[in-house]
Length: 114
Length: 108
Image (cartoon, one colour):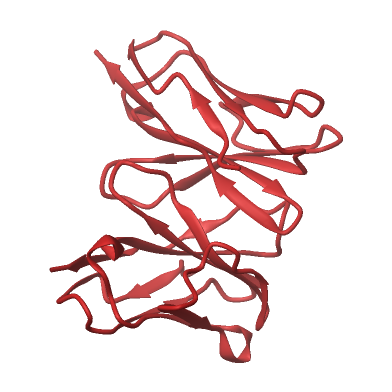
């Protein structure tokens, strides 16, 4: 079974530029998560999708971050414009369903904003 | 709302045991445990559900006290491969929060 795929693996941009990350979850997984992990901290949930609907986006900075999961499969997370404090690893995870199911994580995208 | 873990860091010799605690200020539906090695993604260890159901690996055990909103992860006869940062994750309604993390180092 193929794991969660993410791209790119690394990205360096200047502040005020925009960037997009892509995630393809494990086939058949209804729930998809985007996390932000700043160095030395635990992952922070940005947004959770159930199929193509948003379950929770309470910690997503909506003035600059957006995400979509069209057709309930792969997803993109966008930052526009980026700030220095957005430097982090962005992790995508998927699970068979929400709540009582283990999450499988992709390798992450390391974003550096200069 | 982020669960608090203790200890923050622990160093063990191979074969020793460790307990990692996770405490939440909110009523919990589920507690997840993950391990993350440096530069890698978190890997699932265990889920504990309200009502006592558990899902996870055979060599790892954990407890979930619903009333106290706490969970503990028990690592016995530690191996070098157990080194990493351990995170609990708590499910509250539709929201999910990872804990503050516990760094575990196992030395020969």
